[in-house]
Image (cartoon, rainbow, N blue to C red; front, side, top):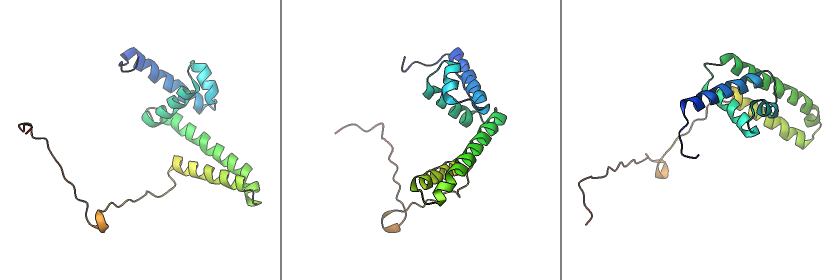
Length: 140
């Protein structure tokens, strides 16, 4: 089946399944239960929700906001449960709090944009060479 293009019916079915997966997730349904309800693998349920969040954000803005709000509430609850242990010096809890904070920052864009500067050898300008194949050239 690899290499075959999906027909319009398959594309429509997949799009509907992604919307159903997103709606279920927005209502708080676990990924395992989404997979069971839709008759797909657990990894497909994850992929469907992720793609719906990424690709269909404008079309499904309410569901996307709901899923993000659920995530924010989960992160707050996790942080609240881990923080007492972290403050007592439990390094495992500290690590988990940092991971929760990192994921939340990624999801909600809390971090400042990263600036990258590219330079050539010794900090000089980058040399760019564009080569176009000469169609008339023949091997010698």
